Image 1 (cartoon, rainbow, N blue to C red):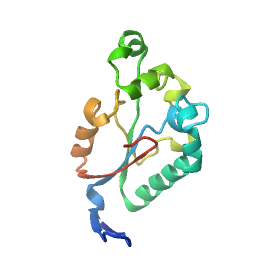
Image 2 (tube, rainbow, N blue to C red):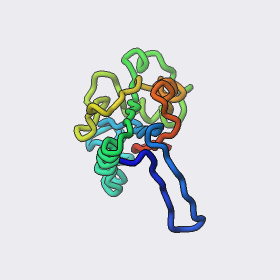
Image 3 (tube, rainbow, N blue to C red):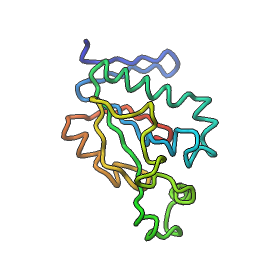
Image 4 (cartoon, rainbow, N blue to C red):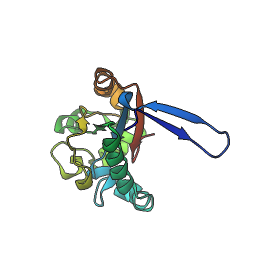
Amino acid sequence: MADNYEYKQDFLPRETVEFDLKKTGMFITDPQNDFISEGGGAWPLVGENVKAGKVVEKLVQLKEVAKEVGIRTFYSPHMYTEMDYKDWKSDELNAIDKVMFAQNMFRQGTWGHEYHPDMKPDDNTIQLSPHKGLSNFWTGDAAIQLRERGVDTIVLAGMSCN
């Protein structure tokens, strides 16, 4: 097995990027029912795109390839507690969080908060602390988890990994 991966694109501008696989992590954000399962809180907004883009199938493939080449997978789940739903002031939330609160998304202990059945963690998956808001780098432990495992390059994937 090679230690490096070289990506070459055939269209302009031509670029070549090399990855040190030992320092690379597959970072999958929000692989949960509320985002990528029919019946999830975001499904009325994203379901058509999830199906058309074969999002779940592609995430499963990425996870499998990462494991094959020795790249650890990091899950960045979203979660809000009952207390968050009770205490947070919706007028101070960003627009995306307002939608999530309106749809009761990522509520701790619910089906929507659980991982999609095809995305259950395996022995190559590191589960990060659940994040609130829009980023595990801002409100979770992503930075320390990656740093402590020597990861300095991430392949970012997920339904909403912008």
